[in-house]
Length: 465
Ligand code: FCB
Image (cartoon, rainbow, N blue to C red):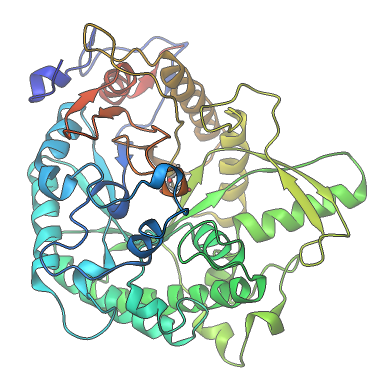
């Protein structure tokens, strides 16, 4: 079945809007923001069209040996050209919110300087199409595709980055200001600092913990600077961030392992939230000197975030390990639950655990900005995609989320990762996270069974047991 429009995407067996859920269902609040998430480099393609500059991911993917199978994001899902089709699918699925990101090098091909109007126009058209479909645009300013020209000046470890990023954030907010009311400044700053500068498995491919710590501090400064610039332009916008979070489970009950787990929570989960909200790094991990902390930075770090976005994929088991000089712990994904195609453990209760903790510690509205799983199920003979494991994954996670909300967690939205199968960074196209299958040769999209199921959940505001 090829998706052509609303009809094709209607949830199967839908009981329709307004159906009365029974008591055993996991029920969500009215006006809950049901959505999907994507990121520019992972779906857009058109890597050098309409004046776009080169990004660090273009450079990295074009370097032999960096990405599985030699894959690149040159074409990806071709969403730069097919975005109207993507939005029609979201609409047909009954989505209320679309999380997407802006490619900085489309707006400022060299990172700073002259604005490329064609790039801005693309996102204006994108946002207008979402609004016309009755879908809230939720805009992430940076999902890892730094202009290569700025990496050539040192990239995130360079303190000048904070000002350059704030200028870019201001340009976008000014251009979209009246259309967009929800912003995430960064996607997973921990991941782009650690994987990009600490261990080099992501762009720009640098493996140097010294650079990683500097990058992390500059990213925190940039978050504060960008927040102030954006607030001045769009005082009513909801400005937050999307942070990767893994509940830290001590490997044993020893005092050392419990302390190690808290340290991991500080490093992995709240390293970009605490400075914004308190002006200080978490006490459990704050190597100020190595990060290049300067007097006055404590004020610049601050950003009174309106909301916190949580990207949840897995929990981590943590044990104290003195041979790990910097952090003093080792963390790994356990294998007690079933594993996805990516090898990530499926652990739905982890979502409950992290959401309730963040809700308790920060008292800010929470949105799940990403949660999802990779399975490879291909289209069958009849053209449908029977990805029952993905449906089971979402059912279990949403049930845990409903329980967290019932227990008081202030969660107002959920975005499945991802709308489409897409370019999964170092894994290329080998990991399919979509609710919608993408044929990467021809760009054709097919809603998977899980996508139909998710549409039904959104329509009902409840998950059947
Ligand atoms: C997250 C990223 C997202 C996607 C998922 C699977 O870390 O934010 O772009 O790759 O993982």
